[in-house]
Amino acid sequence: MARAAIPGRLTWRVGKLAEARAETPTARTLVLDVPGWPGHLAGQHVDVRLTAEDGYSTQRSYSIASSADGERVELTIQAVPDGEVSPYLVQTFSPGDPVELRGPVGGWFVWRTSGMDPVLLIAGGSGIVPLMAMIRARRAAGSRVPFRLIYSVRTPDDVYYADELRRRVRDDAGLDVTFVYTRAVPDGWPHPPRRVGVADVNTNGWPPALTPDCYVCGPTAFVETVADILVALGHDPRRVRTERFGPTGG
Amino acid sequence: MSDPHLDGNALAGPLRDVFAVDVTAATSRCASCGQVGAVAALHVYASAPGLVARCPGCEEVVLRMVRTPDAAWLDLRGAVSLRIPM
Image 1: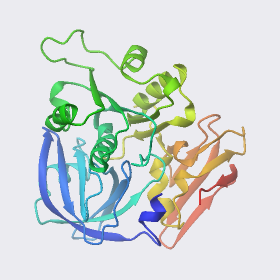
Image 2: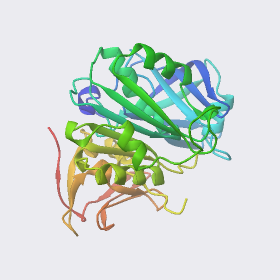
Image 3: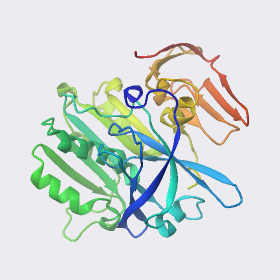
């Protein structure tokens, strides 16, 4: 429960950028040191607040990409064209720079390492971020719960955590990853670009009889489509957890 | 996108300003159609003044939250009940 990790009132903390890693030409992972960070569950998010010198302040919500690791928190941020916050965080924000964070928040779209049922993760674009936190938390906890990830992206260049996913598929027993490309496919890919459909979920997910916990994260239209497919295939709607990434103003 | 709603996960920060527990993990019952589900699964429209959360079954308003400089307004008339895991 989030309340176990964050007793009392939620407060703003000041984090500092320790390092940054480019994920794609338009997305970057920020590794933040946040003194007093209480820890978090995989799938939770933080509110990030930026304040200009003239006092103007604005905030955004971002999913946490990392599993719990002391006072270190990783966020992966996609630069939204003409956005107010994300272009700054992706292009300008530099090591040593401060940023205010509040969290972790959200106690529903989370996976706990005590879970025993198989897990199906379905990501659309930057919706991979909280699901990657679950994959990392599984590894960190030494969990043997079988995980399957279906990751829908526009092109191979848009894949976040590409090297790490390759490595984890090799090293993390019980983790399968399937890609669906919607605009351009790698050389030699067996079919043209397409959106996630019933066949993808049916073939690369889990049968409903195994009562998997399903987590779907991505743009609103993607989430609605995939959640409908899961329920149509016979999955219990109560086991289908969704998180929509909408146009947040960037 | 024609349908810009988010979901109740986006209420987690604003509601944690007010409540000591995470209300998004609570189960709500819609006063209009009776549908039961997680607050996190409500459809949230953030472009209104404040946050408007609607039932995913009937699209009636379940919860509204507005912040002013010195107060938080929470309108729960669309929810019969909230079951909060303790």
